[in-house]
Length: 220
Image (cartoon, rainbow, N blue to C red; front, side, top):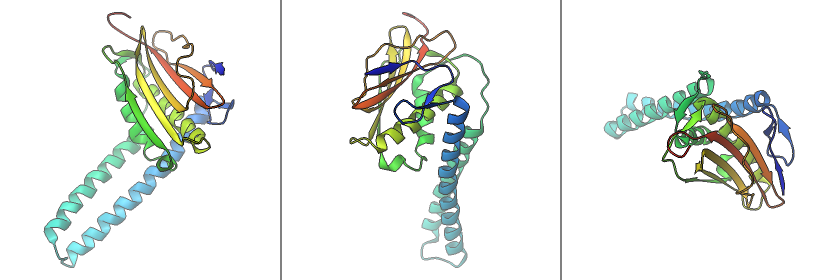
C-alpha cells in the first residue's frame, strides 16, 4: 500500500501516483461539467420547443402537453441552478456544516459528468450527529475533483464502481471516495481548524481519496 498525504495544492488525477494543482484540477473538472450541463440544457430546450410546436398546431392532448411543458421548465430551472453553482464564489469563511450537504451538492453536479453513466456510484452515509467546520463551497468542489479522479480510475478498474462514504470519526469528519478495494482505514491526515485536509491511499486493487475536517460539539 502506498499512503500519501499530498501537499495543500496536489490533487489526484485518477492515474496512479499523478497529481495536479487545485487550479488545474478545478479548471478541468468544471469545464467537463459545463459541457455535460450544456448538453442537458440543449436537450431540454429542444424538448420544450417540440412541445410548444405541438401546442401551437393543436396536438392530440393539449393538457398533457401543458403538463410536460411545466415539467421540462422545472428541469431547465434546475440545470440553470447547477450552472450557477459552478460559477459561485466562495465566501472564504469557516462555517458549521453537514458533510451530507456537500456530498449531495457534489453528487448532483457530478451526475452531469460525461463518463458518469458508465460507472456505478453509491453513497454510504455514517454518523452526522455533529457538524464539521470548513468552507462549504470549497469542500463541495474538492469532492467533485475527487469524484472526477475516482470516475477516471474506475474506468480502468474491473469493478467500474465508486463508493462515497462519509461521517464522523472521533474528533473529525471524513469523506472517502473509494474505487475497488482501496484502503479504508489508513492514517488520517491532520486537519487544522477551518481547513480541509486531503489524503490518498493507493493499493494494487484500488484507491481511497480522503477529505478530513474538524468536527464541532460534544466529543470534539
